[in-house]
Length: 159
Image 1: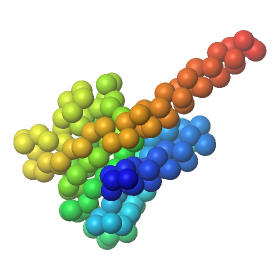
Image 2: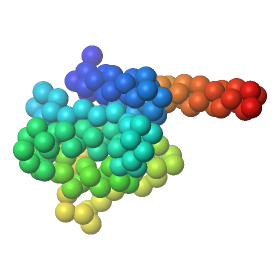
Image 3: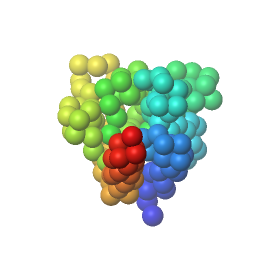
Image 4: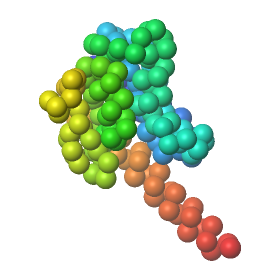
């Protein structure tokens, strides 16, 4: 097992926490050296707050733990390609490298829809490693949305 796979498994554990509370199963961990310094999973429905994405929460925890907004040298592992908001936070917090699992064709800003993370017009760029454990990450999301559609269909039947 590679180092990237080991930390992506930790991000998947965070995604499982989100799924357990019926949140979209997205998880993230921030790593510095070989230590996880921040964890997060999607909480948007729970908090009814648009900014409580996994990446945002993991970055926030890492900044609090390190006592600085500069996460220079840190790596972010996330199960789904970051959106524009999260990509902005990644750039602003100076994360060095982003490793993600599944591509996001609707909002992915690490190479799929666009690439904010490697845009030289910003004062910071990140190395991007796509597709780590892509099947596991994408499969978790696919299962979640399949179950959600089935639940909504069943609820309509009983109304």
